[in-house]
Length: 239
Image (tube, rainbow, N blue to C red):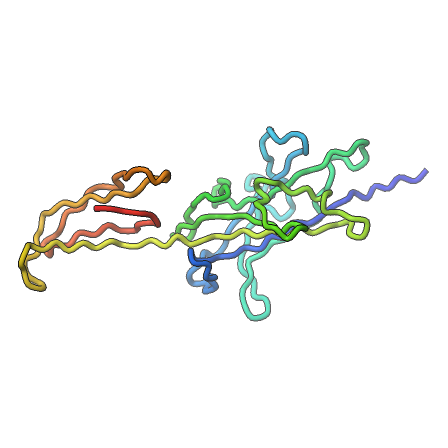
């Protein structure tokens, strides 16, 4: 009797992209962090209500830090951020009948291992980004693999027994701006009549877009009649 102990496996290749809100790629390494972290997670199919568990992947930083570090590598004419999780088992027990599939996902995490959910913001390298996950399906459409999950066995065919699933993690830079206010008296000339001690409060429209909420503390104009609100993220504001 012959028993085949080769376990069906597959790979997940992740590409990291950085871009501005208008879709322009950010390729200057001076504007980017030195590295980011990705965590491979899985659970049994049919157990979708259970928690995702970090995989003890050989490339992890360590037993207490179950995530990999990704740094830019020069390839051809530019730097590429990518990482491939290789030889991932398709089934919980490939010898069982029926077989139970593993479902996987890859999540960006911060330096402490906190998972960054799809659409969530986080700060790395002193800048704030919004994270998005995508994967090209066989139909040519783009889906979020953190919501649909990745079944490696579903990508296997008679010709391709060890499939590679390609996914992308995109960090969109949420540029922060400073709002500088100059308060002048009525009927004054340029550079004259600036008023100090005038207080301003800044409000931002809430996430539902229905009302404004005050952000931070009020600012008071200085001796030059200037007050500044710093590091304002994207949104609709009013004074």
